[in-house]
Length: 179
Image 1: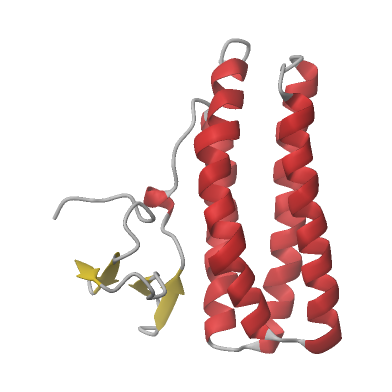
Image 2 (image 1 turned 135 degrees about the horizontal axis):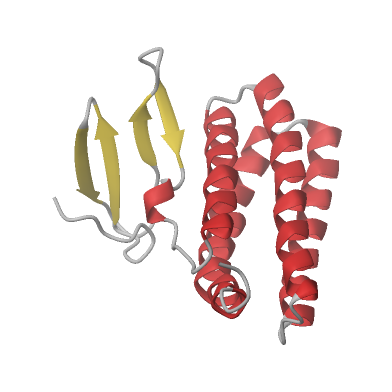
């Protein structure tokens, strides 16, 4: 089966089960996710697989994105299962990881005088604010559905667009200085 970009067609999604990869066709209003078999033979629900996340010119940035996506998928799985304790733990871990991710990129952009640093940092700051507000709301009402909705409708579409645009240009620029 040919791999296809995950969000390019909203009427498709893949299910990976017992080593089999299924591409399912759905109507355009369906929620898109992947299912993978986890170690204890339960299901782990993924919003996006690492293979479906666009790659950039710097391997360090790709590794950071992959690690962040692993945490995000675990958080998404916990929200689907409405496991409040796991959501609490993973939300904190995710926010910390995003901050480290953004700081890493911003330090490189400053060090090598990246021309679009203010715009790129502005996007990071906007997501930081969204995550801060999401965390405050979570602390107030422990609503897993709110976190799930944010991941599906805001963070994943933003992440894909951000990697395809800002991170791609940033990595191409930084690759001139970093080998």
